[in-house]
Amino acid sequence: MPDQNLLEERNADYRHYRIAGTPAELGAAMAAQAPAIAADEGVERMTPGRLRHARDCRALTAEIAPRLVEEIDAYADAQGLPRDALLWHYGLGVEGACSAVVVRSTDGLVVARNYDFFYFESRRHLIETAPDQGLAHLGMHEGLAAGRFDGLNAAGLFVAFNGAGPHPDPAPAGMPFQLVVRWLLETCTSVAQARDLLLSLPLKEPKSYLLADAHDACVIEATPQRRAVRVLEQSGMLAMTNHFLAPEMAALCPEWDNSLARYRRLCAGAPPGLSRTATIEGLQRLMADHEAPLCGHDDGLATFWSAVAVPGNGEIRYSLGAPCRNPFQVFHVPA
Image 1 (cartoon, rainbow, N blue to C red):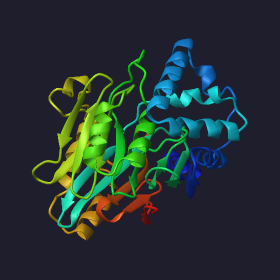
Image 2 (tube, rainbow, N blue to C red):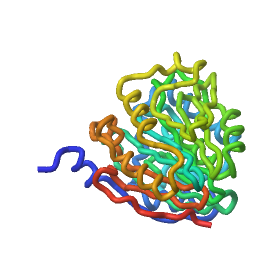
Image 3 (cartoon, rainbow, N blue to C red):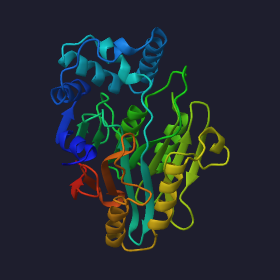
Image 4 (tube, one colour):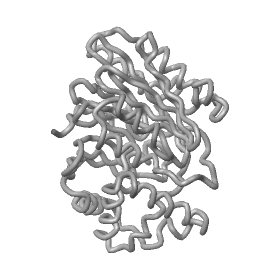
């Protein structure tokens, strides 16, 4: 009999589709791909304080990225819900894991990323998005309206986030991490531009963000109050798991055994300086590793998908499921 991890993967909602148009059209298209949401789902479990916090986060996001709030409102409208029914999408979430690495090949940078989380979240949609304003992009969506968890845009910018320590509660109002990833993909053409924007955004919880384009990469370790940038190392490699490494940030999210093991495995298993083809193939094998493990099968550390991207040519490969048992499929970012 298959174990729980394999059963959860087989029963998960994996899809690949394209959406395009205005925020209203994007929101309606997303709602059509989603299960019906009850008017009190999520919101009923929020304390009055968390509801106020979510409203503050929504208002702040509307100042920065009004199109994303319009899209979420359209999502609610399309499902016949009051717009406040989706307030929990702006609130504090559940802490996850994830691993990512960028490596310099002889033909430019190549990025790999595994997304790990808890079994209860089963929506795992690969979406090609062509907004009427902004950059087209291809990336993964995991249930939070308008959000992306990683992806590559038409300008050749890759963005991903990783969990980094417990959420502050109470927390300051800020832009939700899934909308940060989406906004960077939709508005930024380079690591430099995305770095400057991310350093200026109000954030509500600790996360690390990996940014990579054809020639440059960085990790931004961020809390609501502090940020630090780790640049591509001289060796041509940069890794990110779930603890902070910048000296001024390390005490805010200390290393823990699983995160440290995955970080060391990424550093040891991703040698720079190989051809692009060899780097892609090596990273695909690396992300299926069970030694650390990078490819996890325990609830909370279960790998839902894996990505290997080549920002220089608009190619991204996704394993829709644990990469130890699912093939990587090649996709290209929509123009």
